[in-house]
Length: 322
Image (cartoon, rainbow, N blue to C red; front, top):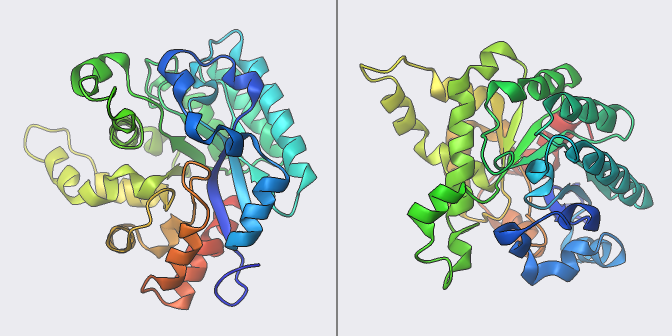
């Protein structure tokens, strides 16, 4: 079943958990996903049934946060390899319905780049997803991680930057007063956005796109606020006293954004105006967000059929070669 006269619907930020990864989560990370535990671990009949009922043809699966970014350089690579082998088996059980983004252990950049290549060339993964700060400390723009981006460019696959919880010092200063009563303030309510938007800006400032001009980055949740702030960010970074950077041009040339967990008409229309229709891809953020609202929203939003087709499947087919 598909919506909009039988058009294919591809949702590209849809999560699952692997017990061999999540057993390493501790503290606040260990509490993520608790309210949807049963659904996130279901990668079989129940997931496919929900997709059928809601008109979703394909999910691109990715491990839920924080994944392998919290693992050390010695143990992380083996965990990531095993997780990707398991994800391959999951996808092979429903090859027409499920695909995957690889997990990579970024604390060991060389091993992460090698695993990205193996996952893409041997397992058919569509790229990789990176969740937040490596070791809870380092943003991914740090030059020690650039071998990952070099390999992604060579393979012509995107890197999806997904939120993780912010640095502990940021939590202590900005968030801790309210997270007991409002745990969502730490994650999707604000902390996730703040951390991932910062990562996106830092990527542009780092010069990585000058070094790897064909590198492609995906941000979920309608770009983690950056399309909304792009004009002002661009202005501020080019005022006297700044080195100056073509922020708006770089961002709109290298980043793609998805609708994951953000089904707002005015927000999407603003993103299309800033990014262009070819840079927007459909996603749900299942099971943190239910499947049902996303396709229904796309049916009613005031876009023409051609633009809806690009968001629902065309842009993903092109970017992920699906």
